[in-house]
Length: 181
Image 1 (cartoon, rainbow, N blue to C red):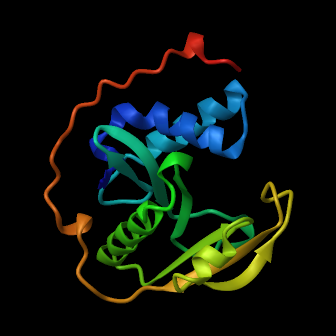
Image 2: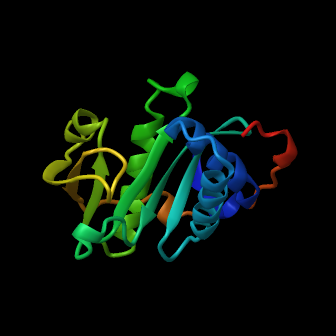
């Protein structure tokens, strides 16, 4: 399993958007197109927003993003981890943990010492990995009442942030007409 920048796999933007949409259980075309736009904006390496993708063989199986801004009520905080997910059949293998480790390394290499996120389902997961609750956020700003968390990063050697990218081609194509909205 490899963790790489989405910038090196731009052809997977639509695939990741679709995977996220399935994970969030939304199924309309407007949400999908919005998700494609967000992932397209995350194909950076040196500036926010950035997305990482977990790859098993030649298949994207998960991702995580680092954003400059996430919540209006916490505008003073930056950056934000967003959209961590791993396909269900690949869970329990440490992939989410690896994605988070890589993103933390990248954030450190960019000079960030604290990360933030919000969650309505995974507070225990994040607490077990050093995240601390700092507040809450309610609808309509978010879809579900959520816990806002932060983590102080520890200095250490980054991996992807210091590596030389190896370009990779993808033959993944999305047939929009075949999608069942």
